[in-house]
Length: 148
Image (cartoon, rainbow, N blue to C red; front, side, top):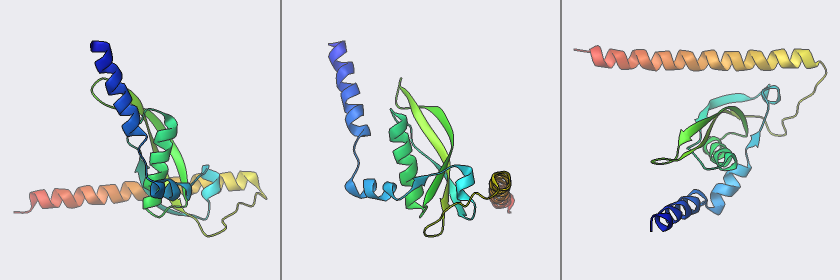
């Protein structure tokens, strides 16, 4: 009896994890996974996170879907980590950075070292901007809490 119960829970979790609409499939397909050097000249939109999934492919699908909903054309994956799926199950989740690149965005690699430095500078500047915005939101929230 216990084995049937566990098997039915596993089957249901697999079925629920695989439910996607054709619109979501088309939407996430518009987002390209990129390396940091491939987003030079692109506009940073926001950080995105997937929900916990059974497979990394499902987590990547979810991450690209979240980026697409923000209007991103490119996605740089930053972290993969273990996350709780349910009561006793552990899956995988991904984090990334969503970017909007110009139409027909291409990389010209004339000087690879210079391009790598530009990409690193862009990621550092984006991270500094995010930290500033998070600090600003925190200070605004603290001001609300301390307002008489």
